[in-house]
Amino acid sequence: MPHRSEAGRLAVCGWSAGGNLAAVVCQLARDAGGPEIAGQVLVTPVTDADFTRASYIDNAEGYVLTTPLMRWFWDHYADAGDRLDPRVAPLRARDLSNLPPALIEEMGRALRQFFGTPLNAGERVAGGASALAAG
Image (cartoon, rainbow, N blue to C red; front, top):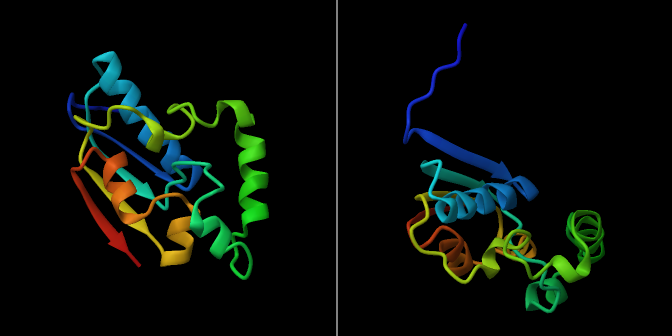
């Protein structure tokens, strides 16, 4: 069966590091002038590696995702010197406007903070046009 697509009907979706990639793809597509992305679904997206966040300190142990484990993931994802680059940490982009609308699915508060997407940050990643589902 041939694959068919329609302009303006493309959406991206990702979970965890995939949510990071989906958010970055939306920013890159906007900056390059296309392709047009109609929406993004970000499921507990990892959007920043700022280990000085209170959430990384306050929730360092006792959860499935500990701070040492998150550091391990980041160490395998990007060199420390590249982690401020918005192509690695989309929350750090200078311009978060004109991005596709987003559905951001988040888990409990502690896990949400570990992923670097507190409520207002998740809205920033989506350029302000977002729906947040906290479960």
